[in-house]
Length: 335
Image (cartoon, rainbow, N blue to C red; front, top):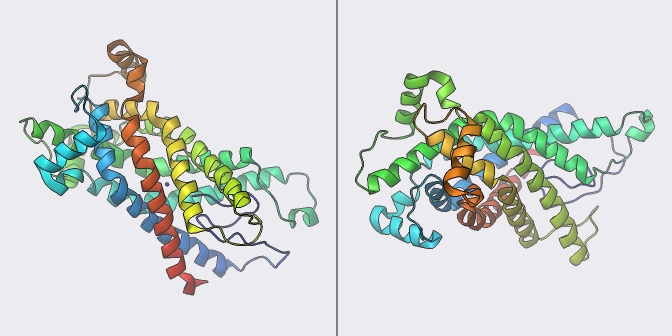
């Protein structure tokens, strides 16, 4: 539950080439459309890579958060047990929901991040003359973080129902493993039953919790990515306004950004998972989930699943960046 543009200029996201924009004519509308299309397509591919690499550890995270793990179970112990009892298919239980939603979600996320950057740039240029507005505009770290926060809002519309279905299927798999009976036969059946039981409101259960997780998470993500990327460029002796950042450096920055995102978002994610998988009527709202969690498990309960989340974050986000860059290069003919 993700890249950023260089803080030195407003450019499409997920690009390793940091090129100086020298007072050139504004791009034509058709060129902007091609750039947006590339961003959508490459974002979808990158997101799919992220899910495929990170889903097994996400499965462990959800089971830990919702009580599907025994006390003392380790991350790799749970992975080993799942692989032994359910095979590779078991490691990817519930993957269809996030995989189906990830392509449009990442496309919307990258698009909305660009929109966010343009919004904060426009706000920052208030009072400037037309000539001043034509000069390169450097986004501050605060502006980058604000653009990241903006990107989380439209993305939640896709993320919330996907997370709801994914969590239900993952928890069900844990119950079946213990001898329970499966309620849902798959992603579509789960969605149909949720609609039948509570309508669209049931499908979007946990939307506020998803926002509470993703807004600070994206702030940490984009802010960390820009900061790490800038420092890595300094270490490599690369001018931020020109030259290329190595793929290894991009993957490192992306991986660390993913870890920062989950470090901030894990408490809200625990509450979201509990709320989304609880039987109807068990909790009166998110505040009730929080109170029950603190009473039963203490504040440490808010950080359940952090180990698998952080272990997953680095390779998953690295894979996302790699998938994004490979796709962008493949779509170079669209420039």
